[in-house]
Length: 471
Ligand code: GLN
Image (cartoon, rainbow, N blue to C red):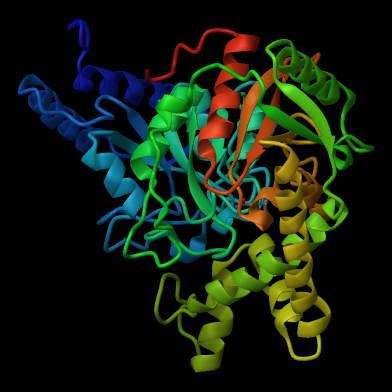
């Protein structure tokens, strides 16, 4: 754009054409064609007057769990299929203030529940690297939009891995910020004490630039932190000398695919050669992470989803005989199987008699898991581990086996339980060419360190050009 060879309008047109051509991947639930072009023309005019924002020309996809005024927000559920939001999510509004162009809303697992994007009421998303495979989930649409060149960046949400796991499966960068770093105002609530909004990008620098814009306190979200926002780009020094990186013993055990393990080891070697100090750490409660997460997240989700009663939001069953039947049939017809499973599980662990045995106990274990991280961070500056135990699996492979599906989150949920920031970046591929991700987890609000080490690794491994990155 600076050299005058393209404009926001031309870029938008090009991305719209790519979206059209790749519609078979099913990444988008709505595309803002004419509207995006109009905005692009406006921004081009502003540019000509020399007053454009920091994200000028960036084409962005938004997970369809985030509100945009006057647009549908479906959460990939029949329940909200025709629901139109009344206001903008803060993260979206902040992107627009900086002249990013929102190109559409992306597909997801229904209410962000899942690890494969097969739970969408509007059909599964396909992995662009191998279309017979899942892209991961739940932010599969946002991830694929970025991986397949349909957007420069995209916003996803990460409750237990929904940004990092798909990023690993599709070979892009995915960042889950510290809990409280980004306002959740305008994000349809699923699991309020876990979820964070974060970017997908084709480079760590792009992820840093998006975070810069969306991070920071918002009076409309009382859980958003008042901690000052540092200059993230300034942390991308490529210098990792003396940086202490911890390898949790518990992450390198059975269940970890050999090729994933090898790629992680190569990353560790590269960092060691650059002068990073690699040491072992222990996260002794790691084996409880999945059970703790699936007790607490289902409890929170069952409570958050109580609002979909057929009266106040979304779908209402036709011709109910009475009020009770309206509730029962609206919820039975509006929600998909995984959502129902979690509502039942969550209601169960919160019910009198089981609350102490499950919910309260899981809260205590959550604190122990968090303390494990705090203890590790006394010795190291960040933790390195695989993002996922395997590469992308086949569509349909795990859909009838919820436990197997839940286990694909084994390395990602701990950062959500502890509320700490984590990033996944590509670190190689298996023999079939399927991407492998490495994850860096940092101290609370220490996104600068995870971004710095991720950017250094991206540069060291040079896994190929990133023609679709924005900067
Ligand atoms: N796969 C996890 C789950 O199903 C995480 C989902 C998410 O992060 N939104 O709950």
